[in-house]
Length: 422
Image (cartoon, rainbow, N blue to C red):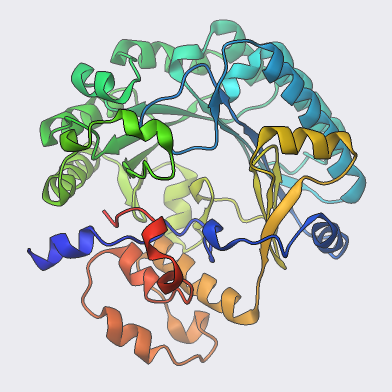
């Protein structure tokens, strides 16, 4: 097999954190999280992430922590527990400015206009939002209504991200997500009418029955909606970890050579349409803040991917939500029932995490710069550490996740848990 294809099929993390989430352990729990929060300096800035783990139906390709629900009652009950968790965190965090706010899922639009507004009101009354730079939300275009779009405008959302994936009817049928291009376009128009002019569209390659022509056509159609940003993700087929992916015909998935061709051709189309490539898989208009951050080496990477978020601390709210503090990472209970019971008991839902050593922080800085800048100044970021062995192991390898993996001290322990590199 060609060496390029061999490398493309290696299993490596996406490096939205270092160490990656599979290495979190119960040695970090609620008590340590409270202690870490108490140690935050008053000058520390915050980023809030709220996870809504529900969708009306599960897409076959989905790798998110979410579940399908037909009734609204479980969603409303979950929202009440989010309110309780917000109150708990508000009591533990004093005088810290929030600079970024992000709603993810699942599908946050499943909350509906009223519930979303009530949660936003509680956040505004609990935290200091006067310094907020970006307020983002992830949306399923199939469930955006004029009423919901208007609510987004009222609560101050500045960025709306839509899952577009691919516009081929054949591919949409194969991944269990039917949403014609016109439907996505209408959803974009609705949020723009509500005053939200910053739009992101997520595209994917490596999907079942997808061709190079499909990926290129989808990229071209996406740019016709004039988004501020686009992301081009490779589908990660991990049916042993996400049972819903067993609904995908593995024989219909493109091989490594086809995935590489799709990624290259779609990226080339996005660049031809005037978008600047950012890091591994993001694209931004020349006027977008992410493009400016990339040019000045101020781009960051967290669990939502590439971001301009430079907050000192990320607070995760909701089932499975992950937080990042100077001392380490924390994650809430993944199971919704466990999350609900813990919050009802008036306790933090943190069940696992990772306490960072100085070595972890050093390697994390190196990996983040590689992922964001595609280069790293080891003298500046490495603190004088000798990385000659890592450099020798990865010399000449063309893919940034593989290069980053050379600096991952934990990867050899559990490489098969991660997706392919390209």
